[in-house]
Length: 307
Image 1 (cartoon, one colour):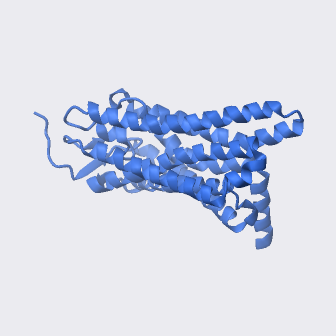
Image 2 (cartoon, one colour):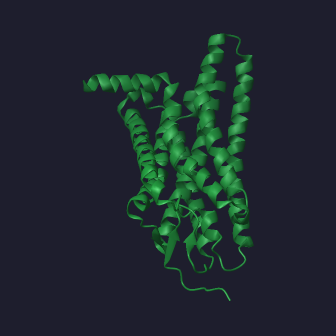
Image 3 (cartoon, rainbow, N blue to C red):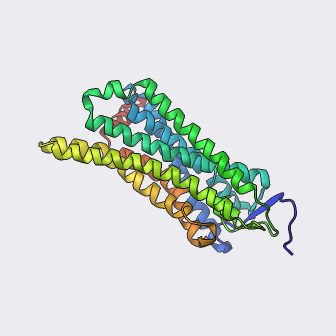
């Protein structure tokens, strides 16, 4: 007989059980989180303060920075607290809340990346119609749709996972309440729940990837029709940062969520999860700013104004 009672607390095993590694890992994650805060909140501040960046491309980018900041903040502080004070317990409700917000913001990012690809398609392939296609109203509706779909899906994911009955000991082999890590604690057959997870995640990922793929195919065809080197360079530089962010994000998400939880190797999952919950939110502001003249110009303008 399985030892089954009403779940009140989960124990998160964290990244390591070696106490000698806890302080070095705390310092590393503190630096990562500091750069994440500075990069993403700095990007939002630049976009708000510089009127030249009040365009659809940068409005989407500002929301991407907000989402990266939010879902990194849903994981990293708790992990760092575990390193410092050894508190690895999390209540049932806190675990569900963390799962809801992390999956919600991750799904919002999924749809934001698709929206940004469509925006780049409109800018490169239909430049004369761009102003009438990507109006302020259209941009607002697209962003609102990203958040609505993101948190609707978060409701489905969280309800799906927590509809299961869990068995003692309630030990989560992860550093946060990720869906596969929680599902494996189920006492009973979880096949239907896993099928729901894979189907919903597959729809979200492949719908967004289809929009992105079609957008980039059209952009590539348009670039081939441009005969000037300057035109090629401008079109490529417009899309390079977004394409880099898309590749990094989807490579990790597909690995994590498009396989049954029984197929997951927990140590590998932890490494991949560190990448998409902590490293990607830190990298995105760098990816979008290093090759972006407008962002660099806005940064210099604000720095010189402060002096």
